[in-house]
Image (cartoon, rainbow, N blue to C red; front, side, top):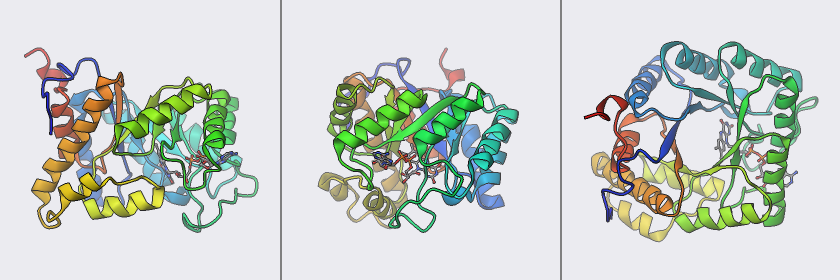
Length: 299
Ligand code: FAD
């Protein structure tokens, strides 16, 4: 599938970032820490740590970003949602991040606490949505870098393309610095969205979010929930690989790298990887893109 392994040249004209989720157990923490240490030499622009539904990982997200600041050379971005907390509580979490040396926040509304099928109701006294949260963070005056989400195949709650793009523009006007997309599999999905966004006055960098899934059926379930289309050619690639983790991983890294190549050919330079806390898939994808560990660059 990779037609030109040498493209994009030596990887020096592209930048990557990695997303992690906070670990639930000691064993998961050990694995995440190994992953972070293995990925650090790829010199990502930043690494982000998610915030569990309903703020359920508040402490663990904080502890993870704090440790990244203290023990690595990486720049962490902490995700923050509006769910299940008052404005004051959310801003206190942001302030805690700042005090821990975290200067980048991924500002989100979050999913309804009752589940993704339920109607979203803001917490009484809470931020209404991500735009409201971005304004709140800007008013806090802590000079955060702020990233936000965007949805190239529309969010399940979308009111249509015009409203979707107008809402992304509202995030930009409120002070967002960058948008990171939901995962997708076809380059045209990204480029059609980019065209719509630019026509709608969105000038923010729109960084593609690339899924590095180790488990195809799990990913398919997730895709169904978030309205990401899964092309038939992708399904066919994974047929019969349910019990074959090794081959599945090779396919996943190849598919992800191929998508990045196609995006890169048309001018994309930044890639955000949903790592699911696994180093090997992220590392092999970076290798296929020509990226090498910093220490190996001079060689
Ligand atoms: P918003 O962008 O505020 O709104 C979601 C959608 O609702 C919009 O895209 C739009 O379609 C519609 N909408 C809402 N208000 C309006 C309006 N006024 N006008 C028009 N349309 C409107 N979830 C977590 O719980 N923790 C995380 O750490 C996390 N990280 C994520 C990171 C990325 C990059 C992405 C893409 C998603 C992440 N999510 C996370 C999932 C996210 O919380 C859900 O998708 C949630 O349902 C929406 O949050 P949001 O900030 O994207 O919402």
